[in-house]
Image 1: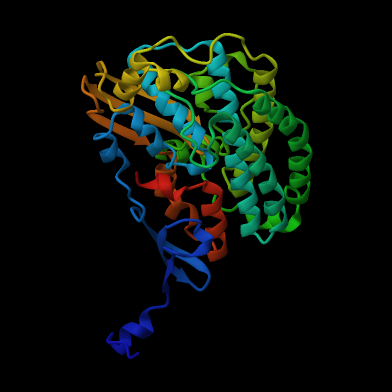
Image 2 (image 1 turned 45 degrees about the horizontal axis):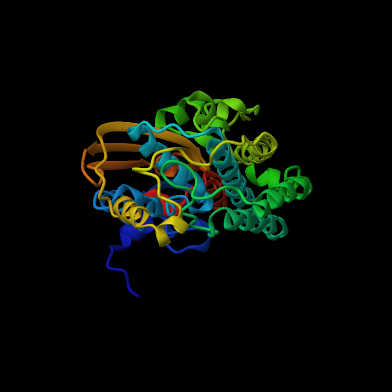
Length: 399
């Protein structure tokens, strides 16, 4: 096809415009990055946000509080239970509900399993992006075992809709406890083998060390949290700074890096997996014996067996799910340590049946703003591993 540009302009232009995405498999989602490259070097980049805009926040303003849980599932779908619990805790803060210890410990177990599943995906796909496929296939078997535990807890695997406002839908059954213990016995051997395969691999290290780095100051300026901030050397973790769900009861460390590069993100996420194993072990071995839900009949769904045979329970079930019970007016913010950073819920209630305003603080939306800076001057192949290491989830990017 003949270009309409004057010949002199064609001669003077020494760079090439390249679309990385929106459907390129290496972007792991629907992201478009318009790159200007000089040979293999990236001169500039311009990212596009909004390819999977699903209007979560606007939908939430038209839904009863109970029906918003299924929207949170689809933010970071690699660690859905954390999203679910974060939303429930936000509503509980508005209502002034305090959960029994057992309910809080069960939540911690579910959230830390979700963190392991999230970081397994992050680190194993990062290995794939540097040419190592075997490790990914190996650890995905362990993720399936986590999904088996989810299934025992709530009946679902990926988008879990786990828990309820006021606690858990049901108690941990014997099968779930057995599978958690089995996971704690088997998983460490598998992940240790994965780390042995990848962490000190010369090819992997050459591809990741010194790539996509960011200083602590720049990371804080952007508003980084999670692994990406800790990899830059800042030990900020919501579980420690603003403890929720009895995290103050558990002993665990906050891993940090030094250079904020791809390799540091890999190492920090890997170490966090070991810390999550430590937390789950403490929680399951010291599981309290009180109730798995709060005594809040106006907001917590009655047992299903009662709903089937008791008219009063049926009425309350309908009123709670359909938003027939008004919520108190108020304004709250609650954050949890999500799989990829601080996941926050800013909720404004005017006393009606739906939120007046609900804003999701999606951590990866913030990371993506820094992406052009992180890849400026690097090679095209470095742009792939940098995006992979940031753990940017398309479903969460533009809620």
